[in-house]
Structure formats: C-alpha cells, structure tokens
Image 1 (spheres, rainbow, N blue to C red):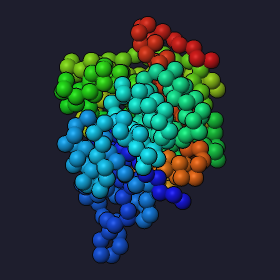
Image 2 (cartoon, rainbow, N blue to C red):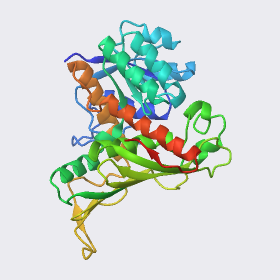
Image 3 (cartoon, rainbow, N blue to C red):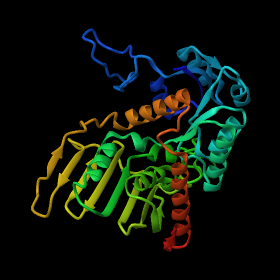
Image 4 (cartoon, rainbow, N blue to C red):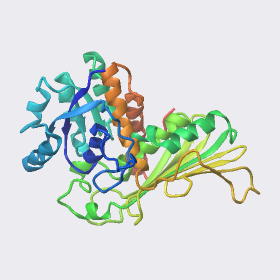
Length: 363
C-alpha cells in the first residue's frame, strides 16, 4: 500500500495524539516491551505506519518550525501553500471548531483527502455540503469520531448483538472532566463563542449522539437544558439532553466540564434481561448485571482497565482507519453522514435550550 503523505493543520493539544499514528514502533525496552512515558504513550503503534507527516501548518510560525524539525517535514507559512502542495495527499485538521468548515472546504476544493476533528462543522447544513463536495471530487472525507474505536463500546456492540441483556429500555451516557482552567482563560478559544461556537453540547455531545445512532438508532424526540458555572466563559459547561429514540427506548446524555477528575465516559444500557455498565475509570471498565438480586454483577474482562490511554488509543485507531481508507480507496469506518447526524442532534438540543426545554420532535 502507498504510504499516505499528510499535512497536519493546527498544532494544539489534540494534534499530538493524532501524531502517534505516524510513529514507527521504536519505543520498546530491551525485552521488546512497549514503554510508556509522557512523550511516548502506550499505543499499539504499527511497525510500518500507514502515513507520514509530510508537512505542518499553525498560525504560530514558531510552533510550526519546532514541529517540522521533530517530524522531519516541511513547515508551511500558510494554509493555502499546504493544500496546494502536490506532495500532500491528505490533511488532518485539528483546529478550533469555528474554523472546521472553511478549512475542510478549501482542502476538498484543492483535491486533498480530509480528516477533521469533531465537530465536523458548526452547522449540519455545512456538514452536508462538505460530504457532497467530497463525493463529487472523489475524495475520502470523515470526522475523527473516536467513539467508534473505543474498545469498551466495541465490546458493548458485540454484547448487544448477542442479546445478553435483552431489549434496551433506557440508555444513559455521562461525559465528565475539567475544562475550568481553559474556560477561564479568555485568551484561549475554548470558552469563546467565536472559537468553539458552543460549549458542552457542541464539544462533547457529538460523541454521545454518534454512540446512540451507532448502537441503538435514531433519536425520535428530545429536550435539553444547559448551565454555565464558569463565569469567565461565554459557553455552557454543563448540559443534559434527554428523550426517546425512534424505537421507543429512552435516553439521557449528560455532559460536564467542571468535574475535577480524569476525563471519563460512562455508559449504562438497561435492558429487559439485565444492565451493562461501562465506566472507563473502573476496573474492569465493563460490568454486567442480571436482575435485581445481582448485587455484585459480573466483571466482563474482555476489555482491560486502561484509565490513562483508553481515549488516546481510540483516537490513534481512528487516524489509522482514515489512512487505510485513503490508501485502499475504501469508505472510512466512521460514515461522515453519521458525523453530520450528530450535529443535527446538537442543533436540536440548542433549539430546545433556547426555548426553555421545549420538546423537539425529529421524526
């Protein structure tokens, strides 16, 4: 397979995890075991990476120059020069949310394959436009929705297919962690509407809304509420979105950016024969309960406890899936239409918030 030559756009926090997908498997100790350090996380790095970082661009020239030396690649002085570089096959965009639509559109117009961090774009109409443009130009385009590659969720999919807990009755998700420091710093984009467009619903919501569609189906109706505890911020840092799927299964999705704890995701699937609980910080992450007298549950050890890198490894797997799709000219595992659907639910949630929690019917 051809090694995909990639331009990385935006060199903030998340790009460093994306970059792990491009590293050869050289970080091993004398016994051949993978090592784990702050600079070299415990990812399943490929011996022969599918892609190569061929160029970088950031609005900060010093940051671009530094990373270009580390990656042994070209530092572009403008985004335009990168996407017009014939040596670049694809771009990996990890920019503030408000910039996603413009940068993806320009890259697709320049004939580049594109991977963009979530959200795909601030508006569903923009997402649909980008998907159509990629199709018309014969390009691979998708959103970096790592939810599809989280090992615990993949295992839940297998358990549901085997009908371990019967028919789902209620789904609950909870994404929690702290963005307080960044939200208080008005020089950063995270707490500004002109950077992030929305808060917890726009930032964390796509993960849960994608998960719902993937595992359980479309949302039928919802209502939402949002709060802001960090006064310096312009966006919500807590939100609750609840309703019913088209199947009749109830759901609630809660997001908070003020939980002083490691980032975590929790999923509860309550069915007619039992319950599956996923908690990424628990050991093991998956426990299955069978009825009201099953006080201790059964530890499902198919997925190992990995509180530090469970999320990072799923991001790396998603980047590798994109690179493989470009190399083989196949569809990505994450269908971009599902990334767009998540933004449709985000928009519906914000409509409900702006109308005092009004029920929004989607089907």
